[in-house]
Length: 444
Image (tube, rainbow, N blue to C red):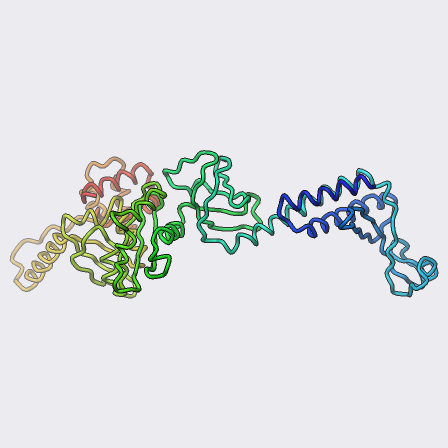
């Protein structure tokens, strides 16, 4: 078995070096594989013993032993040995001892090699996965530079410190186009001990990537003078970052923007031209909400429902479309950034509401000498009227939208296509036509 032993020994050394696994773990895996091979071989000879294997860490030679307990009267020959027979082998043997009896391994041959190989591969894989998990679990949230290795249907395989990682297509930016061998910045998002794919999973859409990029580009954030209080992204499109200075002499927004925008532009380039709004954090939630709607300028902010965390923001008429943003993106990100539900109204709308309220008050105060006024259109009819002629929007669908809380175009300005598609009977093309029409109506 010297040749097999030498082969095992060389394999152990090579695998331990290549995989970065402690040699002792691989030696133990080999010993377990030898036990499996011995069991398979000797059971074929009707010998069902308790086997152990030992491999010399210096020479690579290995031995297989059958373990038998010393007893007065033998009942199971495969597992027990009589005291008299044991003392013939070892005069110091006593009842209850366990004797390690060397076995002839010359006939194991290919059986041993094959069984050892199978168990060895499995054990090495397990040890390697455990090592990767231990090496990376404390690095979650860290931004690293990874090299593009290959492309798969649903993912891009990268290499980080000689370990494969997975960037799923859904975690890449819309504008990401990579070449093999290219080095890219990613954030370590998760490490899965049991994953059948690459254990280390990375992302370029995670807000932590944006935070870490700011830490690397802005010295004031790196040294703690400026802190990032919250960060939200619609990756590849737009992001908002709330910053606060702990030094009254340091402008947090200016520090992040840099001279002529140099600092923030470096981050924008890395994120494939993702727009970034840097917002000044304020302990006063109303002031923070006003800041979060940047680039729109709020005239006033008022709390509608404190328990429900809902506020109303009033802006100039020409600022309404800016405050809402394309497909409601600006107000949606501001809401996520601040943790408040935000209703944006124009000054003109508020003025009309005030006039209507005044008229209603006067009508109540004066005698009713006029014919009954026409009843306002039902919510479904109102939406149909405002989007008259829109393909796909019939009376039944308009009613379903009204029942879902969207009675008019104003109620639709901050919703997403996903929210509309949740309405029963809504087709994807119709949802996008509705959103486009709503934002065209409001100038967004």
